[in-house]
Length: 214
Image (cartoon, rainbow, N blue to C red):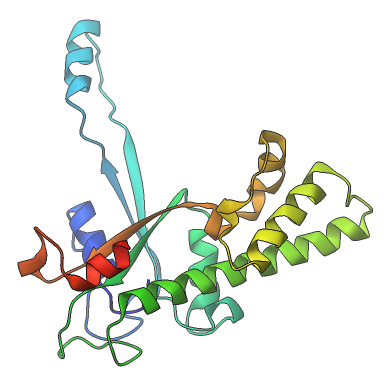
């Protein structure tokens, strides 16, 4: 998400730590923060008893808190390049969007508009993906492999991205998917939108979170 939308606060809540500094100014987070959390599962205790296990190892999730994204990040603005390189290695993205008004909390664009903010982030991710696809396609063509599975997959991805759609909308078969996996395309990853609302709106949401949902 953008700077100052609550990414580090959410990270601290999910990891039950204060490992990420949360402050009221852009780019408070520079270096990525990492936290590993055990996934609670009541079935695990039952299985431990049945199998008389000596040791029980729960499944874990690794969360990474990164710097905020700004307009032009795909071209290296702000901490864009570092941000994008970090999240390319993740399996899924939690996109935090500010859905509350508070004159004491700075917004990098001067006003709160969750739909605009979400579209800005998604555009930057798509532009970064398109640059990745174009760069790889040039190399594939140079190596005379345009008709390969990878070449076909890249053509499909380029068509979707040039149509202002996320890479996840491209229909690839299993072999094509494997060929482009190493690119770590951002808009092909699963994305969860987290609307950051005021405490009083936690139960029901508000008008801004409704717009985001739509």
